[in-house]
Image (cartoon, rainbow, N blue to C red):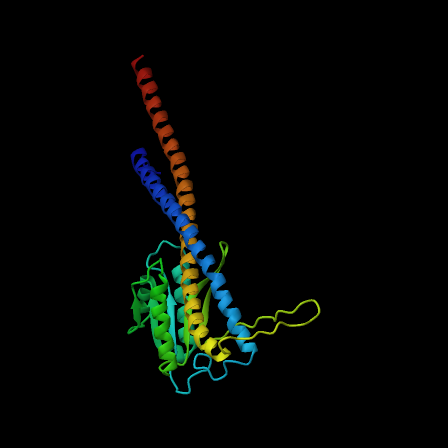
Length: 291
C-alpha cells in the first residue's frame, strides 16, 4: 500500500488514459460507420457481377479463358496480405499475420513465391519472422480508393496471364457483421465464379438469356471487372474489420481504466483513513500526556 500522494498521481494517470481510450473508441466508431456504409454499398455491384459471370458459365462460355484456367508454366504463387498501418486494434494484426504465416508455411508455392503486403504492421511482423524481399504498398491506407485497387488488380491480372504466377491469393479479414469477422485466404486468380441456383419459377422452368454482344465478348469485359470488384471488396472488408477491432479494444481499455480508477480510489480512501486515524491517535495521546 503506497502513500496517498503516489496513489493520487496514479489516479490522475489512469483518468487521463481513460479519456484517451474513450476518445479513440468514439473515433473508431465513427470510422466504422463510414467504412461499413462503403463496404455494404459496393456489395450489390460485386454480387451482380458474380451473377452475370455465373450465367455466362451456365451458357457454356469461358472454357479456356486465361483468367479462368491455371497457366501451363510452372511458377509460384503471389500472396497479398492486407493488414493495418496502426496498432491498438486488439488481436486484428496478430490474427492476420498468423494466418499469413500458416499459409506460407503450408504451401511451398506460396512460401517460395511473391509476397506483397498492405499495412506497416504486417510488413514488420513478416520481417521479424525472417521474410524479406517482399513488396510493401504504402499508398492505400485505411481509406482505399478504387483507382489504387484497380491498378493493383490490373498488375495481378497481367502477371497471371503472362504466366509469371500460377495463382493470386489474398489474405484478409472478411466482414460478415459487427459481431463476426473471419480471416480468410481467398483465391483471386484463377477467377472462380460462385455456383448460383438458376432462376426457376414454381413450375420448374428456367429463364433463358440472349447475350448481346456475344457471350465471349461479354466475358472478356466482365471477368477483369469482377476481379477488380472482388479485390476492392476485400480491402473494404479489411478496413471495416480493423475499425471494429479497434472499437472493441478501446472500449475494453476504457472499461478496465474505469475499474482501475475505482480500485485506486478505494485504496486512496483506506490510506487517507489510516492517516487520519494515526493523527487523531497522536493528538489524543499528546493531550493525555499533558494532563
